[in-house]
Structure formats: structure tokens, C-alpha cells
Length: 630
Image 1 (cartoon, rainbow, N blue to C red):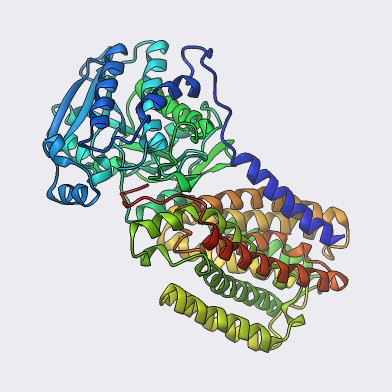
Image 2 (cartoon, rainbow, N blue to C red; image 1 turned 120 degrees about the vertical axis):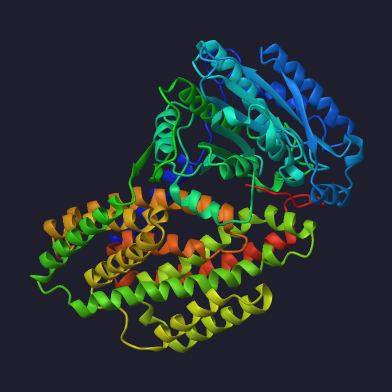
């Protein structure tokens, strides 16, 4: 019965995650004038992305003239604003085979204004870049952003005038080094009028649009976004964890420049279908029109909310927040994280007290359960890294642009292989790893560590986690002796990790605090129903928590892997640990143990096969340039 609960809960969680990760249906051209329509926006995408249009090319001038005409039609009174390219951008463009001399070594921005009722009010800026890399039509990056801005302006005009002016900025030379944004924010007359920014970007050709970056002190901005995105097609996709991770990556967009000036705002991008990024395959026909609908409607609703707000957001404190399955945004202050941790401790303590009265576990068993979690984390990271390098070198070690883009095209294969690897290790834990020969398991971990270091380069994190994984594997008697010991041990481990992250980076602590609280609540309810977990009703709260929490974790894991998976595949091990915490009481009994271990081995073999297949198939064309990306 528990085997059915286990795989049923995981299957439902995966299904729910897949459903909520879908893009919304494109809205037709016959939609009301006040609504964002991807079909209307696609008319501009097709015209802009007919051919590649890097700076200095004839098509670059063609797109510029087309956009000036479209901006005039929308009543924006457009003008060009020029500025010099940086020496680094000139060298970069020449390396890429561009013709910066054809553009006079200058970036040409397009600036328009939709007047507001109060010309003295701080303005809202809608921004996207209109240049591409050589060889790519750039249907997503960033023709979708430009076309979405035009469609949003049309819808805002249809909704009636607002008090603040709306400034439209189509930047140039973003792909070279954010030069257009530097020119505008470096001295344009409208620069000091900007009170909030909405930027649109892309890295790939599909997927849900994420709000992945905010201005500093984002509490008011996130609160406004949460209200606005709830009205957008497909709902919100964003989290403070994603913002935290992106802030520590070496990437940048035009929003980087406005953020450095302390201007509040939001940055949107979709990063699915990565094989289209900076590729000749990035055509209008290949573009996911649902992604256009999602990013465009979010940009429209956010910009419109800013325009019609009594006052624009100001920098203050930050919020901890995340969308919940694309339905709504749950948010709280960083300090509230401590209260949630206290509540987790209270609920976990209640479950331990209730079960302890029956003598169903011991305090030592909770410790063994926590050590089991540490074993899983170390082993999963090591094996995930070893499987990942079967698909090619780490992105940080890519020797050429062609290698980088090939790796990016293999990213979906890497994600599937890594997820199967994590699942394989999790199934071993759920069936009691003491069943396996400790020496054989230790040899597997050691070989994986060596392989990861040789093929992927020296990685201190992998090596540091391999040592305790080997030690815990070879030490007998460390597996928990009861379901409650294993479950409460994982909750205790997550609680400890939550304490550390809450102290060091509260915006990222939700990854541990929220699932830990959910698991503690399920444990308390199950303990009150039946401390022995023999009553199926006691498993019901566990299953519910596993489905809802698992779906949220799978969505978070997908977004994180698309962002950092090429170099940090072990990030999915954290998702696996938290998922294990939710399903630990559903571990199958002894009779099913052999079958589950066979399934674990099959998952690991399949993972290796997928990784190697990615190297063979190379499911994307390659180009010759690496540009700054979100």
C-alpha cells in the first residue's frame, strides 16, 4: 500500500508541476483592445525577426526604421538618441564579424513618450533591446520583448490616460555590452525622470516568463507585481530565491544599468527551449507564442499597475516571496522566517511527543535520520556531477562559443539525467541502504568522485561532500530503525539548514523553511491520527503535503536547473532532499524493497544513457558568440 502512496504522490506532484509550468494559450487578434494579444504582437515579431539584425548591418537599419514607424503610429513621438560604443564592445563586435564602423561605432537608441495627465510625475519606463547577435534572427531575444512593449503600449492607450508619462526605450548594442542602456542612463534628458523600470529579455525560445530580478529594496515593488501578475495570462512566476541566485551570477541585462542607479523595477525573461538561444533556429515560426503571451501580459499588467498607482514604489526592505504553482504570490518579511521556523519546531516537537509516548522511536533514531539525509545529499551531488560530465564539459571550462551553445542545447537532456540520478539515490534511501553491500556502494561513490574531478575539473564542493558520503556509507548501523526516526530526522536536518540560510541569506531561506513547515504540519497531523502510521488516514496528510510541496519544489528545481544546471547539477540534490522529507513516511516495506532497488539501478543506468545521448545527438545548431544573458 505504501508503495502505491509513494509513487502515486510523486507522479501527481510531477503531473501538477508539468501542468503549472505550461505557458498560457495565446490570445487572438480579436481580443478586446485593453487585452494583451500574442497574435497581434507576433505580427511585429515576424517583421523584426525576418533576418538577423546585429549592430552595423543593413537589417539593423531596417528594424530601426520599422520601429520608428510603429512608435509614431502609437503616438509616442519617437526620437533617436546616440552614444559611443565602449572600446570593449568595439573589439567584441569585430571578433564576432560585425560591422561597428557601419554604425559609426555608435549605439542608436529609440526613445518615445506616451504623455500622462501629470507631466511632472515620475515616469514609468518600458524597455527592451532591438539588436541581435550575428547569425540569429532573435525572434525571442529580443524581438519578443520589443513586440510585447509595442502591444502593451497599444493596450495601455486603450485603457485610458494615466497620471505619469510612459517612456519607451528600445536600446541598441545590448548584445555587445549593454551600451545602449549605458548611453541612456548615462546622460539622456529623461534619465532623471524615470521612477520605475519594466525590462523584457529572453534566453531561449519558450517557457514561462519569470520575473527574475528587481530593483534594490523590493518590498513595495514585489507587492505591486504580485497584484498585477495575478491579472496576467498564466499567472505569476517568480521567487526571491531566483532573484538571489541570479544576483550572484556573472550575467547582466539592460536592467543591470538601471538597477545600479537604484531605480525600482522588474526584469522579465523566459529561458525554456534553450537550443534557440543566439541560434539561427530562433525564428518566429519556432517561437512559443504562449511565452509571448505570458511575458507580454505580465509586462502590460505590471506597467499599467505602476502607471495607475497613487505613488511609485520606493526602495525599502526586501521581501521573501514565491509564486505558488503559478496561481498567486505568497510573500512575507525576512523576519517572519524566524516565526515560521519556530512554528516548524513546535509542530515537529508535537509530533515527536505524540509518537514518543508510544515508544515508536528514540532521539538517537532522529539523529540517524538526519545522517541519512546528509548521506543522500552528498551521494546525490557526487553522482549528479559524474552523470552531468558524461554530457560534455562544464560550461565554465568551455573552450569556445560553439562548445558553450552546444552545452546549452543539451540542457534538457542534462536535466532529465540529473533528475533520474537524484531519484535513484532517493530510492536507495527509502528502501534502507543497509540492504546494499557497503563496500560496493562506497566504490561507486569513489569512482563517481574521481570521474567528476577528471572529466569536469576540480570541484571542491563535490570533493567535500564525497568524504562524508563515503564515511557514512562505510559506517554500519547509521540507517534509522523506524519510519518516524527517518522522517523526523529529515525534518530536523531541513530545520537546521533553514536556520543557517535564514541567518545568512533570508531571501533564499524559503527553500528550506516552507517545505520544512509543511512536513512538520503533516507529521503533527499524522501523529495525532495514528502514531503507528498504520491507519491509511494518517498517510493522507503526508500524501497531500507530498503532492503540493513536491509540485512546488519540482517547479523551483526546473527554474534553478535552467539557470545553473550546466555547472551546478547538484542543485537538484537539494530539491531531492526536500522531496524525500515530504515522502519519507511512504517508504515501502521489506517485501517491495528489492523491486525498488532494481528501479533505482534502472534510473541510474537510464540517466547515464541520457547524458551520453546528449553528447551524441547535440540537438541544436551552434553559433560563434557568447553574449551577456539573463
